[in-house]
Length: 130
Image (cartoon, rainbow, N blue to C red; front, side, top):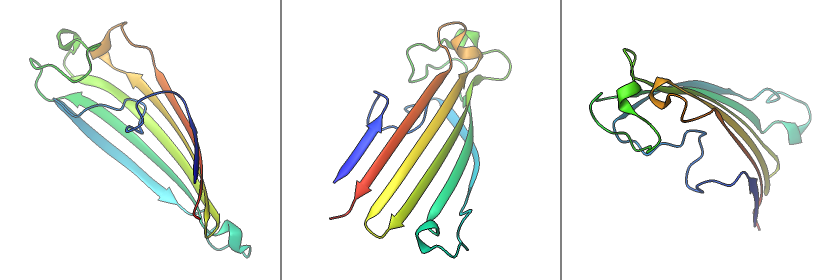
């Protein structure tokens, strides 16, 4: 059984930009840490915090991207589609229960001009293994 509460959007994508990868390069930098892994309380040991930073650029300036709102004529010298920051906190207090909270923020680049504002993404999920 899974209880999944998230903002309405395409169910198969988990990032704020959520691009279909056509004419796009995505550079990712991130990491994870288990801040309470050495806690004397066993139910706190399996908590993980992850972050990721993405930078999206156009591969071919003359080619279209998968986002119909973008305009490759506005790209400029850096081919900047935008940047994104994602964070995730997951916690498994018991062997059959898992909590997950995700947040993402996309900052559109020059390719969008004034056609797209920053986008936020939130997701809270509780999963029970029966």
